[in-house]
Image 1 (cartoon, rainbow, N blue to C red):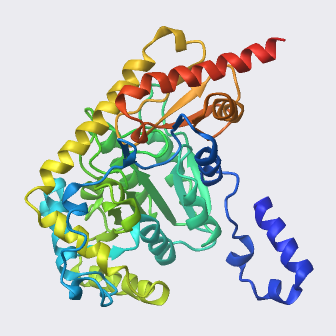
Image 2 (cartoon, one colour):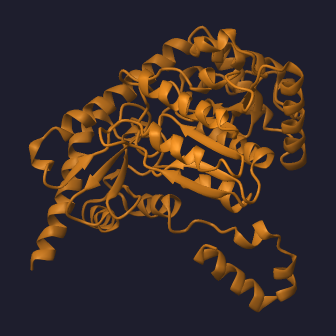
Length: 435
């Protein structure tokens, strides 16, 4: 049990032991992550007066990046599209429109059978539904060692699943498909594995290429052929932000209908793709050959929604539907993509400077919002604090060596100075250590 959960439990016990006895096993293990990304971002928000590269949003000209087609129409709706409850599964027209978008973005899906997308309260809610449906105590969630910390909260603490990790990269800096395969096959005796694939990856910003993608699919099929039932979840939070020669489709298309022992589950949404973080609209979709089975899974997922949030917010679903149907949507989306790609390319250009070679190397990245530095001489959290306190720069320390930088929220022309200041913080630490 996490030490923060232990501290909370101790406080509750000392104040009123009866209340502590009311807590479920999940309740006893739950805690607010005051030592991770949330707390570091909060600290940076109050102190990062120069650049705050901690948050997973995109900033443009000092304001949250947004689509004009959304902002212009916030007051242009029929009250019927705003105030009544939305259906638990979401607005039918939005579900239909999102399915059309999925087929447009993922041509592989055209000959596959998959459910109608169900609206969730953004992606974490979709992951939570998947966890409720498929994760139990004793099951294993298989994720790479470079992963979003909330997976442990959703699948581990909430559902009691074990977290089994493998190195994200192999010796050649490519996706470690053999490590994934070994992790899946290690669950042969248990007979079940939950595999979660997150591309573009948070925190590294890496997406596999076609060859690596095929190896990932084969690793899952190998597990199925070994008699393991595999729930293959694709967390496509940063989908479409592919800047180089990587996969430009979700692996959901390749995994849907692929094997009787494989159930593909797609979690995606407008949160990152359409720069609508606060609107909280996501989707969960199942892939399987059997239409009756898909319908049953939809009913179970909708039941979970009804028993938890009842239904998602109606206004934000309406806003997204309006945007998807707008003739300006694709053009404006491309404009934002070009900005994000320019920032990613600028990061790579800046990091080619030889002066940084002794301080760090960087993990391969080609997509998404983030990239990670692998530090050579200083501790990542010490660097984070020094960059914050001395230079007003906020970053995220992920381990002793890894520092995450969210280039999504830094203007392209400011990226060089951002890394110069992080480097200056490294030099400051080295100087202090040499005294």
